[in-house]
Image (cartoon, rainbow, N blue to C red):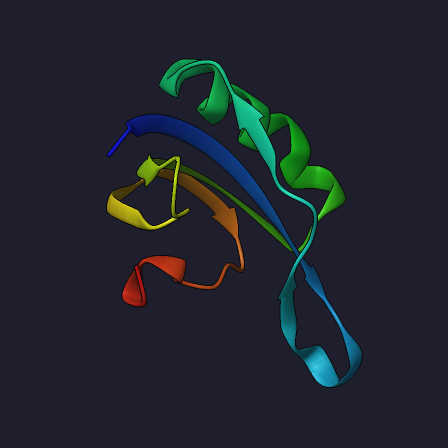
Length: 81
């Protein structure tokens, strides 16, 4: 099993009837870059969150997720991780 720590910036859009949906996410090199990118993207989306996650590179399974920062309206993706 090969597990890698990834830093993911996830933007959220507000769709029809106000439903929040995930837009295309981006990977960052480290936590500071992820938080900076989330802040910079926050004016263009309903919400943006920066996460740290351990990802099994063979299965794609996520574990040990942590919210680093958030701006605006987001979905708590860690409830299912």
